[in-house]
Amino acid sequence: MNAPWKVNPNGDRTPFAAYVCDETALDTLRPVVIELGWAPEKCNKGGLRNAIQSLSVSASPNILLVDLSESGDPLNDINSLAEVCEPGTIVIAMGQVNDVRLYRDLLASGIYDYLLKPLSANTLRDALTQAQASFNAPKANDPDAAHNHVSTAVVGMRGGVGASTLATSLSWYFASKKNLQTGLLDLDVHFGTGALALDLEPGRGLTDAIDNPSRIDGLFIERAMIRAHDNLSILSAEAPINAPLMTDGAAFLQLEEEFRQAFEMSVIDLPRSMLITYPHLLNEVNVVVVAVEMTLASARDAIRILSWLKSYAAHAVPIVVANKVQTGALEISKADFEASIERPIDFSIPFDQKTAANAAKLGQAFIEANATSKPASVIKALGERIIGASEEDAQGEDAPHAGKKSLLGSFDLKSLLAKKTKPVPATAE
Ligand SMILES: Nc1ncnc2c1ncn2[C@@H]1O[C@H](COP(=O)(O)OP(=O)(O)O)[C@@H](O)[C@H]1O
Ligand SMILES: [Mg+2]
Image (tube, rainbow, N blue to C red):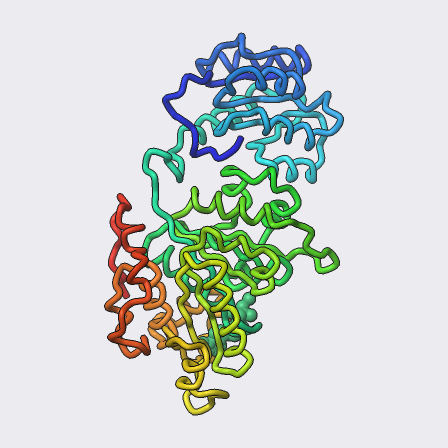
């Protein structure tokens, strides 16, 4: 059940096995199994517990049908099954309990489908054919095509500087304009806006992941994430605000790992408080976008966070982005800001109320709502800088330190993405 893409398609696993509690169901099942070209001997008598016992000592089938009828605690037993089941197995459960909550919980724990007993041959045939199609479908992450991955964390120095705006816009840019498989992980668990900004329901995926880190695997990611675009999946939450975050952070690391497998680009909307509580979140991050406003408080926190990054995440390339910049109305000047953080601001995004309002109204990413606006062009340049694909583009007036050596010079993200088999289309506007 873990990471479906780790499946070896040429492996010698049996295509199908079933563990069913009653004879009636077995009698319905066997002819369908024969029809699908599988061995009827693989339809075993016995339920979930038998499945767990056998699979703990033998190879898992590609598709597994298990009967939950005799299980007192199906969710718990499914977890035990996950522990013995090999990666890639598609598990279909059946049972007598007609409860939509159980159904949703089962799906969240990685079960492909849940069939209600008594079963008809048609239902079984449909479910098994679909499972087979899904098993044979090209996996988003073929292990043979070892893909490259760039992970970007966006951290706002203060609330409201536009970190989430940048995270969604960058994700949108990578996915829709650069044709890169992108995952947006919104770690503002209670108040995240990753889904909201794109007019989507966050779903329960992230909360489920935090509650049950052991369930996080490729299949889970596939199911729990919501799609904003063919190439963009989002994992976000609106966790109940009467529930504090109870996690040691293992779920987040596991999510990052699964993102690395599943996507070419990961964008993490990382509230600064999370950075303090779970510093290891940056262990595998390649780029940290440090989002600031031209204010005193922002400068102070940028100094502290840049220094923290130097000590604890030296492998990550920081890119300082000033947002909501209003010429003539700055609390501190650019020169003073840069002097205090002892480095240049890499990108300056102007304040643009109209685009912000438009984005909110349309439920679109800031960058999409007004693609020809000045903020959009700077965010694109930032995206290009992250990809490393066209550093020259960042040398215009949008990049205040035009002509200076790229900060990514020593860290060539371009080469990380260069081995991509898929051509990256030019940004067409
Ligand atoms: N360049 C900008 N010009 C005008 N408004 C902006 C700009 N960038 C972001 N905003 C707006 O600022 C608000 C806060 O942005 P958000 O991304 O949620 O901040 P954060 O995640 O840092 O708290 C949002 O309403 C957003 O639309
Ligand atoms: Mg935010």
